[in-house]
Image 1 (cartoon, rainbow, N blue to C red):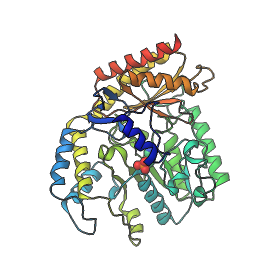
Image 2 (cartoon, protein in one colour):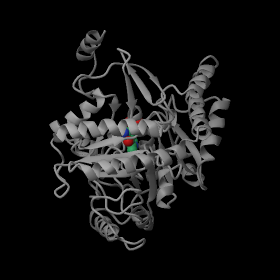
Image 3 (spheres, rainbow, N blue to C red):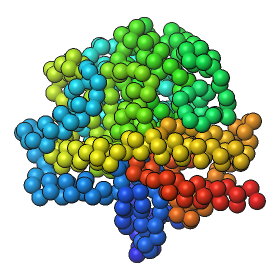
Image 4 (cartoon, protein in one colour):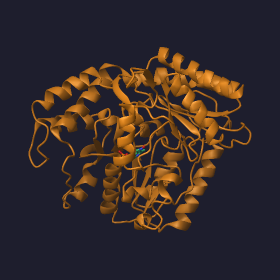
Length: 448
Ligand code: PMP
């Protein structure tokens, strides 16, 4: 069957759809943090699908709720009322601070960010959207201009004018790791700044101001940022950077959009939403990935006032907020609460960060270990001084070895030099011990 699948893939599936690994995995089944291939081999999924499987593959409660709804009603579009959408809207918005109490349901993160930008423009009657270098906000023609990671943008956008409809990454923000953040591990580039007097933050803010003053008009529509940059490899900003950036944007009449597609739903451990870790309250929040534990659904949450600006414009999509999606979303929220997954993210995430930091101290090629909760980046370098990315063949070998020993890890960063570790939030300390041992073996093989 493997060869047959490969043949179909070559002939009938778009070649732009890339697979991980030299010999791609053929997966048949999943259970919580584990995946099983066509030969029954078990893998610890440290990438949670693609940061989507928040509560575990085929989580029994989510599966049961979905099956029940499948037999009752799948879809009507939102031109009718049905209980599921109301119950979900109430449940989801109860998790947000005031005044974020109105939800729009969409189907993907890109669609959510499209809508967020549209909202910011309609509400402010301004045009420009500011984003940060290194951010990922989607692959739609509208969001592609915000996605500043080179492989996703250049070569695609060029020639098609995708980015000319908006101002692309105007602020050259953080690449790679940052300097001063709330993390249980010390970073390689140590920052001893005290709270409120962070040198790195001041530098970033000066650059940000400079960009706002020189590159964009006096008024802006909005600013979009991830609380921790996900695809860029769990990159964190200097402490208080986001807070000051929000202030500068608001002074220019813009709305602040928090892209919580990866950081939401308790993944960062200490808080349910990533923006809370920065002490800010955005005007618009976008959600996807973990919202449905892998079921395609997404959302935008905003204030009543902003939503009212859109009221004259009919916002419609066919599938957003369908009964099945709403039941899945509600069951995911129940599972996070009942299984104590936010706390688990904090406990197991901190344990994992500290274990990985030991590997960073032992191996010169482990340049940085960073992150928060179960959103972790391990940056691979030639040496800690230069911090040049480790050549791709070498990183690939370590990564393939981990897979062969039963551990699946994501990749990210501009040069794909960062291992991304964002497992289902049900992962245990025992799983961490196994994963760290595997990673240690792979690193040891590499240096021998
Ligand atoms: N925002 C962030 C932070 C993401 O990581 C992604 C997906 N990687 C998106 C938006 C886009 O989501 P989707 O692929 O569902 O369109």
